[in-house]
Amino acid sequence: MCGIVGVSGFSPVNQMLYDSLLLLQHRGQDAAGIATGHGNAFSMFKGNGLVRDVFRTRNMRSLLGNYGIGHVRYPTAGSASSSEEAQPFYVNAPYGLVLAHNGNLTNSERLKAELFKNDRRHINTNSDSEVLLNVLAHELQSNASGYSLDPATIFRAVAGVHERARGAYACVVQIAGYGILAFRDPHGIRPLVYGKLETEQGTEYMFASESVALAGMGYEFVRDVLPGEAVFVDVEGNIFEQQCAKKFSLNPCIFEYVYLARPDSIMDGVSVYEARVKMGEYLAERVRAGVPSGEIDVVMPIPDSSRPAALELANRLGVPYREGFIKNRYIGRTFIMPGQAIRKKSVRQKLSAIECEFKGKTVLLVDDSIVRGTTSREIVQMARESGAKRVIFASAAPPVRFPNVYGIDMPTRDELIASGRTDDEICAEIGADALFYQDIEEMKKAVADLNPTLKVFDASCFDGTYITGDVTTEYLDRLEYMRKHPEVVESGGLQMNLGYAANP
Image (cartoon, rainbow, N blue to C red; front, side):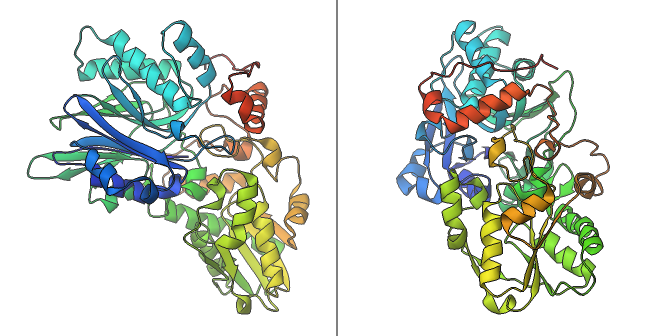
């Protein structure tokens, strides 16, 4: 999970990009970067850390130009974070490109080998985003008939990317002297939207991972970028749109609605907030069937993303809703912190309990999901230490039993508390008196109820079905090895069967 933004305007966009990244900070706290374009030249600054910590006044002053892109990142494997892998990435040939990418390629190693052997391109980092950038650069070079570009050539190049790349990707790209390009993978796994702002000079356009960035910057929401589609805005502000994939279908990542996105965002026609309320509605029926009426004294959310589900669950059960935990907002989101040791240490720094809300009560704690179980275990213990008589735990999402390979930090099976365990065993592991999980189909229905045109979701971390059709057991084994042995990967010493199925 990362956050991307691209702006094509008629006045300096450096502050606009910075402010937009602050609105997308929840999507990545590991690194941030901004690149702007002025004429045929780029200015770029990036580094590790939060947006507010990476950029200084002198950095902002150096980001010249009326169009640009930005990125917030968190790492998808290992606990080390190299500043060299902060985005955007730049390549100077053939036209000068800067790219920011949200997602994860499932065939990046194969592409890297092809780029070196056939395309004569060298990759400097372990990032699949740099691989994707070089694939696009090669396709632009192959499809151009001369030294200049036009929208038709750009769209043919994106079509070439779709033919070669597998996995999840939503991208914004600057092409030096030409404008801003945005495109989304043919499965529509990762989100991408765009909006417009009418000014005296003309119409300005913004692309972003979530609609909250558009609204926060005063842009009118236009629509989601479609799966497989590319949208190009030239330096004069003209917009061009084209479907570039031969086969395409919308399969949004359902974990965006469960946890990743901000509740005030709209994704693929669905309010994230309303989806979480619906999840609480369906979860209430499961709790009602398993707990005698009147036994639960109070319902409490685990701040922040579980609040809509918890509030609706309390309403449906007719049980008081209380805030039992106070969140320290200066601690990052635990789920996207690299390294299990850091996660465990951060829980009690991040949350503190209000003892009077727990003493002598049977409490129902509601969280958006249970991934590794580290946070859940600590929270249950905190509730008991605060005097809770019984602690019942409810997850608004089903058990996370499988790795996610499309850009979310849960690639190792043995890190997932639900992998190979029954619900009763998970309950014992986190120390709760009872545990209730959302049903997979009811989770999907909670989202589809709000937009009936959504028929299929990427729910691979819950059901083990990988929508791109190319993920094998060998591939998952390789991901686990990379996560456990990052030093081998960084040294280039990894030699394993890539385990790719034939391209679907």
